[in-house]
Amino acid sequence: MRELFSRIKKFLGWGKSNQKNISKYHLTNEQITELEKRLGFPFIDKSHYIQALIHRSYLEKTDIYDYSNERLEFLGDAVLNLVVADYLFHKFPDEDEGFLTKVRSKLVNRQTLSQCAEKLNLNEFLFLNRNLNEKSDRGIKTILSDAFEAIIGAIYLDLGLDTCKKFLHNVLILPFINSGEHLIDQNYKSQLLEYAQSEKLELPVYKIINEEGPQHDRTFTIQVKLGENLIGVGTGKNKKEAEQEAAKNLINQIKK
Image (tube, rainbow, N blue to C red; front, top):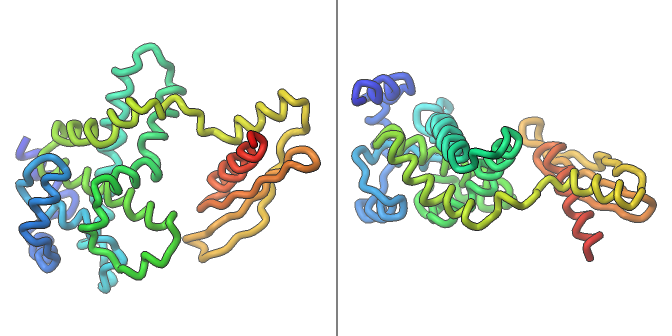
């Protein structure tokens, strides 16, 4: 197992030179102890966790990939999906692939992961350009969810898959499943379509009414119209997200 972890570290570019580079970023002994307490276990190599907390905005160098948490985020995302899929497969033996896919998507989406990061107060440990606090709440949630995935990657490298499972079961999976959130239908476009059909109305019509921001960070505003008078508006980082938000807002209007 040690040899396997060594190969993974080498593949990720985590060698002695990288550990030397990461040493310029510090958490105090008190901060390390507090982070261990919040995650639920002691660390073997704290440098993994420090790198997991370095957002690219904090770095002035152009070659950020040796320092930021993006590579650990990539690894953590893969581990997260494996652990969640394994849990759901055994938890719901009578459910089909469609149900499992929907529940997994709710568990691993940005909103759920950022909430976990907030509960752990990871923002207190982040190496982050504080000017980002002036950005939208959506952007901060992305930073937090990415950091949460990077922490998963750090746990995997430091302590292995079993510890990742215990961590994710405790802070993410069991609280989510026990709350019953996996049974809530969050496909608002589908709900709106069903309402239109039940009321014998024309199908909802979606239209982009605004696009703004640079090409790599666009924000879309979409309007959905149902019948003559029912209109909802939503925004999102992509068209699908904006459509869901518009449908959700229109459904809330209808319920009122």
